Length: 84
Image (cartoon, rainbow, N blue to C red; front, side, top):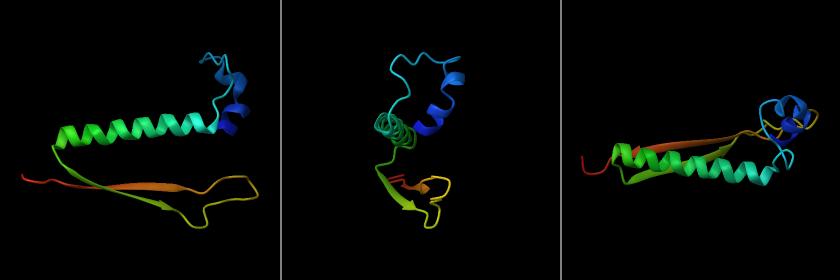
């Protein structure tokens, strides 16, 4: 995402104030983690469940060294409604 932001910096500044430049990968990670936690919490509140199994996978062979693309990561959830 940082690479994309750097490559589209001029275009992005038409829509966003970027006084400190494009955020670093660490900032994107923290934002995604926060959004993910809020999303999971909303599921817990909506469904009233107490058990959520979360599994992460990295797709083998999805890394493209020539184009500098990193591997693809997937997250899946299994929600078990308890006591209903």
